[in-house]
Length: 608
Image 1 (cartoon, rainbow, N blue to C red):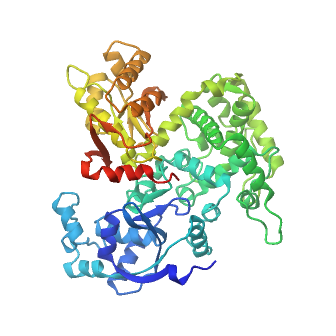
Image 2: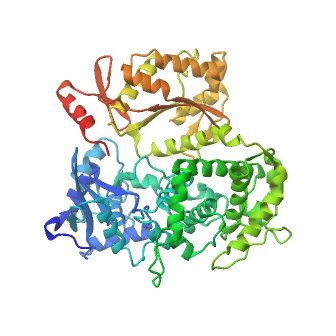
Image 3: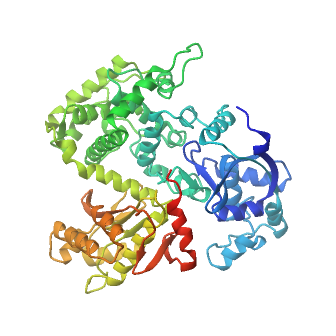
């Protein structure tokens, strides 16, 4: 692959200029091939030390993209380095015990004056801080003709695999249908999913796993795999959770079973052996199966089984590894989980059964993988043969079958599980796409009288209009029943005696709307109908009102009822009471008449 020289330029850019671009979100990251922030504080400190020591830093490679907001840059190589520099500038870590002088840079001084930053001490000498701000970084910029070219460049750069694990390299830029499923499901379970593959570099800390002295958005100890001691922290950082999900999905979709191992995984992604010139048959079979099954249906069924298994483990009251394998945390036990998950999958999805008693299912799983139990999974590396895998899945099925009952309609009746997972995806996505999401604790005031909050309702209708004006391809959500501040959580505890349910990522407090229905002296259905009627009778633009009224649903999130309102745009910008609104971050601002054309042009561009 070659890039025309006319489309490639190499230049030096000052850190000060790059930081200004960073604040304006001109650096973006494509999560299809960029994974997460993985550098430790020590690695970041080494980079800053190199700058202060006048040592050269490897070139930053970006793809130049022109759009509505001007020129932006998609990072291909250098995400870790830029994040290290910018996070040091923002006082997130020190170098030799000293922090960047926020007065040394105009952008940081402005944010310091506005109270957005706090100067940490002791402070790096001003001349040293300015030396960092004035440092010239080599940057190579090319205009990619298509996304595939960006993928190829990234894969070529990282083919040595020094930074990427085998699963990372397998996943990067893959066009196989299974790759998208693996990435999305893994993100949802970790709690780092995003509404779009393209996210600003500034949003990557929210989508990365915390590390020593680096308080990123995803708490590694709260991730399901680590919390249940199925995988270790280092395993999740190396994407072994995605590798496990790949193994499970292959088993869910391919019958009869195939072995689990490196060759099978590579084949699933379309790779072939060096001596094999034939296309990878497994990738074709998986793609055909996903196409017939339906990608969204695979996700929904996976979520259903995962939620049921997670509920059983919650009742067990102990970590998976302790309850099932009888061992203390510290190792990794993916094959044990794979066998148990597949047993649940086959009973629920293939055999049309449902769990009749979760406590009994938890009891049947207890010690099933110990030396006293029937589950016998070989240790060590190498492939897990189809025959041995089949035997162990059948062992688990036989052990837990008495806790299940036949119910062919369970998958259709289990919408609450699918919707619960859907709600979790929405909450996770709101972290990086605040402009498309609005969270409300409820519709009643939190005062002594608990009246309908007319002022808040007006804000909600303006927010719905603003979200709908985000563009023709943008779908947003309003969620009622999620507290977005600790102050509201405390007040709800005091007034309603309701303890919130934490979302899977522990970032959100689900307080539900059942408490407000109780205050109003009515059932959940009556409360839901009341909200639906208020939307249908609101002053929203006619077409938008119709869309919103048809996109409202009630979600049972682990015992807390939440109202979810989907906001799909009309064919043109919408007005509310003759005023046009748009989102600015998580806020709403009026669009002046002189700026109407900009929004109308947003809706007339070809849809992608």
